[in-house]
Image (cartoon, rainbow, N blue to C red; front, side, top):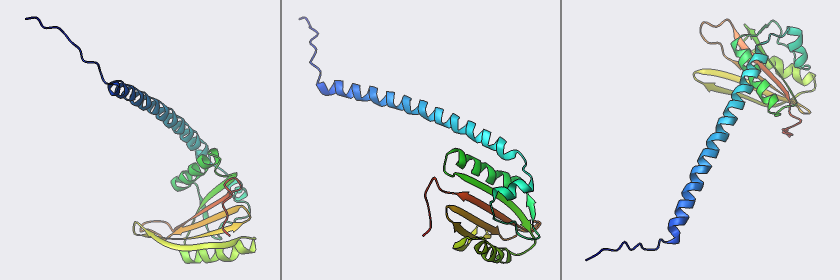
Length: 187
């Protein structure tokens, strides 16, 4: 008795399955390569933005960049960690072409958040801005009072978190940006 090696013809679905597996793995390798490239480019852009944001600006340069948004009276300008983090965010967003122009300032005052926001609600409309939104939100046990103003394509955000224990007064975060590129407007 002799055995002959008789092979059965393979189904065409076998070859379709192999082709799909090859395409799947090639796609995974392509996605991994693209993801690595995008990650490295973003990391480099963030590093450059952090360097740019770390360069100190004079109070006059910061005031000029705010284009008519005044510093709160009796406040002092700060360029510490909070300011550098906000400025890095602004630099990255400008590089991504989300804004035509943007500026940030961090101030510190002994006045209450309510007093600070009331002052901006009186002062900014006198400079042509209109109040869009005012809100109070609690995050992590800290209440943050904020307001948004608009004049043409310029948007201004003023945020004042309530003082935390051990802090030297209340922080004031000012963000002004020109959103001509995005076209977003409150109506």
